[in-house]
Length: 182
Length: 144
Image 1 (cartoon, rainbow over the protein chains, first blue to last red):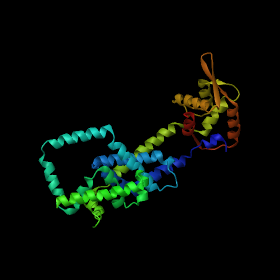
Image 2 (tube, rainbow over the protein chains, first blue to last red):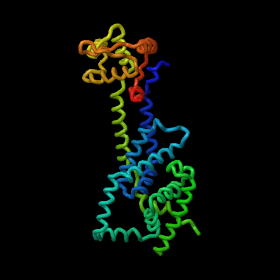
Image 3 (cartoon, rainbow over the protein chains, first blue to last red):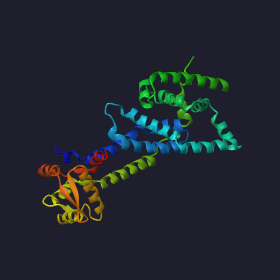
Image 4 (cartoon, rainbow over the protein chains, first blue to last red):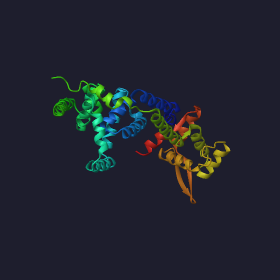
């Protein structure tokens, strides 16, 4: 094969890539959406970021290593993308604005919280979402996605012992919180 | 003591996820963006035939860009019609790949085949294919 031929990119690969992304979305888009929501706690932002994540997957598909699991690969891209977002100037500015609103009296917010806290499941949900991010991510991946510690380690690049410690600490934090509420 | 997270999955579903899903509209938006990127890529890829036609045009004598494009029109290759700039992009990349070299003669840039270019032309002529030669790889190497 000469070099000019080696330079050839089969048209089909690009079509394949489109199909692969389509399949990935069928399979994982809700899971990714929930993971993103767990990070950012906002529905619209979660949807926007999920969209960006699948586009990123398309761009990075050439780099996917066949030996890795495609699921952990996609989740890892998602996790990194969320962390980038949370560290971004844009996000921190929005958050500051929201905090300002917190200082202003608002009745609607109180009503909303009352509705939410009506049942116990919601109080568990709220307690989880109130955990610091580093606990929230491992808790979600372990208990919602039911990933193994090794898989979580691949997704988050946190080492297994740290994950264990965080899960343990998250449980303690949650118990404290639930105790206070009761 | 029981694990406080045992009911996490059902709690999360009940509280938020049950009516929350990545909609078809959102999926379509992703596909549309991907297609947009794809057509952008196509802008930068030429038929192997076109690349060969460019090389053939300077096989016997060096030519400047304008003469090359005229040559292509005579050969009924209209890849660069209304888009002549792309021809220069291609020539530039072929230069980076040391397939052609250029020389300024009387304020015009003339392109010559290198030995490498002559070899490409000879071997590529034997195997005619309709494959697309993507500039992506050329670009990657050129930018190293």
